[in-house]
Length: 358
Image (cartoon, rainbow, N blue to C red; front, side):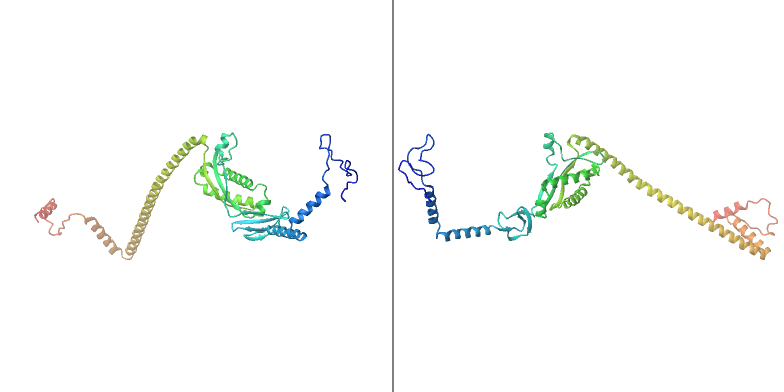
């Protein structure tokens, strides 16, 4: 109930006193009535709202409608959404139009999952060296050399829920895992293949191991490829390393020339040896065959001699004389015609003179 002024004009009957405040306040006059101020404010609010209480209800319905409509959200084809209910994930949304309980009951996180992201490792090596810090690109090889390896890891989000809630720092985790895997692989290889011929093999091994490790963390990340930008000896020892490489190249060239010479000489020597073996085999076969033939002929002659000694003896004599006299100049004299011949008669000279006359 409003306070009434029951006294005289100098003593208003209200609990806040007579209008004087402190020592330096305003003197005289009456303070405004609080109930009156509240009543007037209510009247102004009712006049401002159409229809009185019905207008308030309509305003509440409109507010509720807008609140419910705020729960609609769209996920694009290259995106994925996850609904959070009081901070806890509930639904993983595919592309399309969806609805969730509006804030503050549920919220939604929408991220691109087909966009390729790149993490570079070792590209800040020069800056780290200038700042006196550790260089993440310097790695130790199996043969106790230092190699400067700079590479990129290309990845994208596979499962947005795991990406947001399984890892506190997804990009930092990917970088740490990638660097650790690359150091392990480099530590199992020698420096020369790393900077020359084994880069493709190292990239593939690193990709497989990074995928295996991140999948074991349920990171929600898909690693697409590992790209080695450059692998070389550190700048401080590059000249000396190049000298060693040139020396090894000269050594390899000399070995190749020696191998080529050996490939030319050894087959030739083997062919010559094979030819000599074949000739020896042919001579052996020929000699054995001749000896066997001579033995067979002797055996047949002996058998004939046993069967007819006189005939065989005469035939052997005639064959022997034929062989002996076949290459000699001969003059045959009948026994009777030669009985009066002078003991020395150069018949061979006469025969030669006769041939020249012809």
